[in-house]
Length: 192
View 1 (tube, rainbow, N blue to C red):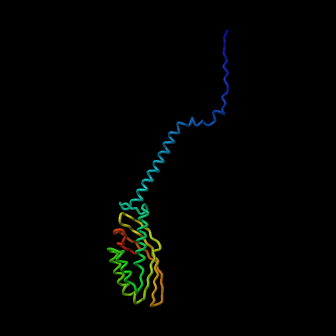
View 2: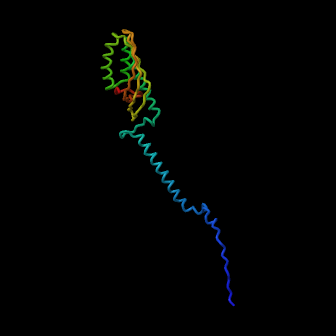
């Protein structure tokens, strides 16, 4: 008597085999993904540090023009007020303008201004010239310790009473300022 046992094999349901694996099955890929995300974040953090350092560094020195808002505003206001005073005059009050220049200019700026103003002192009374200058925009491009550079845009209007004429003009100046005690003075002026 032989006994044979028959084993029944049930067909495999292929629908189950085709289903996506559960999140548990994907778990071994998770550490690789986390490492990739960490590398991207570290790279972005490094880039931010490099850019922050670059914003502070100009020609090997610390430029705080964009980082020190209070001092930048102080420098900009000093440049604006000084330029408005020294480039506005009336033919009958040139002494007032010259005194203002002595207060806010030093070095090369004062020397150049004195040469220019000698001509103004000579011609303004003859022409009955009144010049009004107003800084319409200024930007601090560099601020390093007690030294700053500013680009200023001025609107100027001149009236000549001897001819009854008026003219308007615009000008640009690169201005170097240095801290003198508690105030900022102009040490160089370059027309642009």
